[in-house]
Image 1 (cartoon, one colour):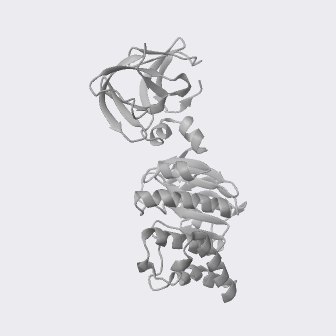
Image 2: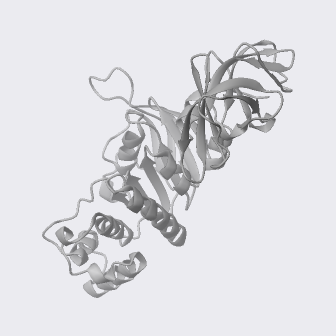
Image 3: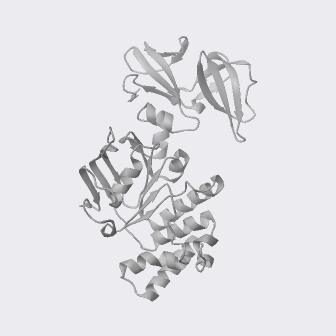
Length: 353
């Protein structure tokens, strides 16, 4: 097990106007599953590649267990990589694919290698596949073999670059559960890169959200969801994302949509803000509230998403599946005080209320 640290790391590629990674500082604790989350081009894979030794930072330091690894060859960092592409040798059996990194290390006898492979295969429930070739395996089985090849080395840390993105939705959900349980059992520090917020929320001990090469927030999944650090995180995390409405603080009240007055002890000076409300932080019906037109309802089985039209805006509300209103009706909406979040309109940062 190991700690992983990025200390003010920069990376600029030629012919790119902006740095791929900018002033990145974060740390994964010993035994932690840290998920780095963000859209394409945010710098998350570049960060992983620098940690693996496949790229070198222009500035800053990267440390494993407190020791700098900048300049070290990948093989000297004692880490194991699992990629989006399984990268299995097609001419080798599953057993030989898993044995390959052990042969490279040349630290164990053949008997010890085989014993470790058998233990790892039993852990991943692929013992019955050891004599097959990769072409005889399903996508999920190939992914287990790729994980086994990483696990069998018993490295200080696992680095995983979107390892589930090639699987179908059902298998991806199943493999998420398996990876989380496996990481808990092994206790190996894991640096997991993904663009899938559901994957991040399910797997992570903590999530590092990135955008445009910069770290936006580092916190637990609950903290990221409940208290986003800025508007980017608020809109990126959650399905549907947080509703953001231009508003104004007027003598301790929040005034949104021109006339929706929401009592709130904001303790902020009068002036413009952005009001953030998760879809479950709005209730429908009852007396008072603000009238809005129902123009779309998405039934999702265990819940429904109601789309309200106010002016040209679309406000999404999560309701119980059998509590959805009629399309075309007008209904009052009210904000749950505990769910109110406020953001600065100029820089997008969350405001303390």
